[in-house]
Image 1 (tube, helix red, strand yellow):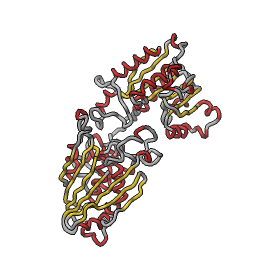
Image 2 (cartoon, rainbow, N blue to C red):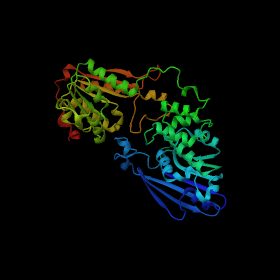
Image 3 (cartoon, rainbow, N blue to C red):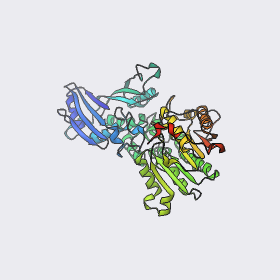
Image 4 (cartoon, rainbow, N blue to C red):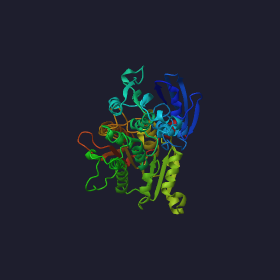
Length: 477
C-alpha cells in the first residue's frame, strides 16, 4: 500500500523538515504488522514528493500478531498487503507522529502556514461509495479525483472493482492533511485490524476536534470509524456536545431492555433443539473458540461434549474459555477438544447422539462440500444433526453490504432459503434423514431471518445401514 504527499510551491524540499524525514535517504520503520518505508521519489525546488510504503505479510499476521482473526483462510489469502487499509492509518501515526502534532522547531512558521498539498492513496477500498469520497473530503477543502478499475479484464461482467486510486488536493497545513488521512482511511476500510473500543473514541475526538463537529458527514464518519458500535457513537456525539446530533445517535430517555445478539439467539436455539431431543453426547464440528461448548457445559443433560476445529489457535482459545487447564478430572473427561478437518473421515467423530455444525459450511469451498456431506451424513451418521448457515436474502438489511457481497471475508458462499432447503432435502433423501427448518433472529415477510437452521433426524431404518467406507479413498487420514 502506498501513500504519496506532494508539496508544490517554492523551496519545497523543506517538506522533509515538516515530516522529520530526510529527503536524501530512504528510511525503514519496523511495525508490529510489517515494515514501513519512507522515501522521496521527487525532490526539486518547485515540487517535492514524499512516499510512505507499507509492506505486510499476511502469513505473518496469522501467527498471533496484530491483525490475525485467529484462524480461517482469510488470514492467509486477503487484500491486506495491497490496499490502503487501517494498517496504513496506523503507520501514518507511527511514522509521521511528530508531523501530526505540528511541531517543526526552526520551521514552525512553515508548519503553521497552509501550503499546496496533494495526497494520493493507491487501492482505497470503496465499493459502491465513490460519491462518499466527494462528500467526505470536499467539505475539508479538497479537490477530489479518483481512478476506477474493472475487477478482471478477462471477465468484464464481474463489474467494477471495489478499489480506487484516490487523489485529494488542497491548500492547508500538513498536520491537517495527516489528521484527515488518519481518521478517514479507516472510514472506508470495513475490515479494521484492531479492536474498536473507547480508546478509539479518544483518538477520533483528539484528531477531529477542529473539523469533525461541523462536518456535514460527521454521522457517517463517526459510525464507520467506530465500526457502527452504537454505544461508542453515542459516547462520541455526547463528547462533542453537538446540539444538532442526529436523533438516532442520542441516548434515549429510558434505556430499552438489552437485546440479545444474533449469535446469542443462534446458540440459544441450538441448545434448545438439543435439549428437546433428549440427547446426552454432543459433538460441535467447527467449534471455533468454544462459544457453544461453553453453553453445553453448563447443562447437566449433556454428559459427553466434544469440539472439533481445524485451527489450533481457536482450540487454544476454547481451552481458555472452558477453563480446562484448571478443571477437575470429571470435567476433563466430559469435555474433549480435537483438531481435525470436516472434509476427511475421522473415527473420532463417531459415537455421539448429535452433531452441531453452526455457521461452518459457508466457509467450505463448494467443491469440498460433497466431501463434508459424506463425512457427516454417511460415515459419522449421528442420529441428530443441527446445522445453521446465513440467509443470503437477509443481507439486504446490512447497510455495509452491497449486491453480491458476503457477510464475512472467509465465506465461500451464502444460500437463499430456497437454496438451503433444496440442499438439505437432497441430503435427507440421500442419507436416510428427515429435516425440519426454522429461522433465527428478527424476520420480515420479504427477506426472512438472518440465520436459517435445519434439524436432521436419522430415520429408524437407516440406523443399521453400513456406510460405503471402501469407496472413500478421498477421506482416508
